[in-house]
Length: 248
Image (cartoon, rainbow, N blue to C red; front, top):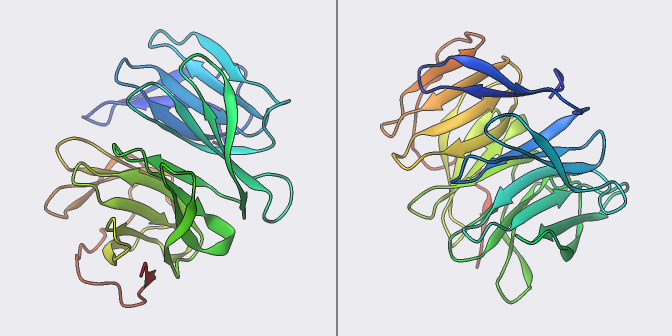
């Protein structure tokens, strides 16, 4: 983000610049199965698409977005955008269809900074300044999935349907079941802001305070894939000692 660039990290930790063209403050990223990279550039209020060769195109402009912070893709190629808005409780969830049409799906969020779409079509939103995780159902209704977080940001849906949450000010990654049950996955990070997972069950964490990309193996082992080398993180899968309230 602060380097105004998108970089690509190989499985072995090799870092390469993908592009730094026309990016002012990139805050969210998503990658399609075809290798297209989508970027929320909050500084220019745009959603960008980057080809595997590094060619940049604009999908949505500043006239449509206020402060886009996070992105997620569904299997049909639609792009979902968390837009923090300009004032408290003015955040929105936007959808850019595979044909490029933009629509508003939900409003009233408080500086949302994370979004993830499940295969079922449910959209999860980190309602960051309200310290809650909300879900937007396929019927268009917004409900609270879990609360009690400390500035949650990045979200990702694992292959088993579990929602992973970067609980930024709690310096931890938490997992939330589809029914809203919350448990601690790993703690000891330094302001984790982004999270992603792969089909093998590994979890990747953008640990902003250490300037590093961390990897959590399926067995809970934490390693540094790229960037800084912070101290080891103790792995645990015990229930959250400061439990987020669960969905009734």
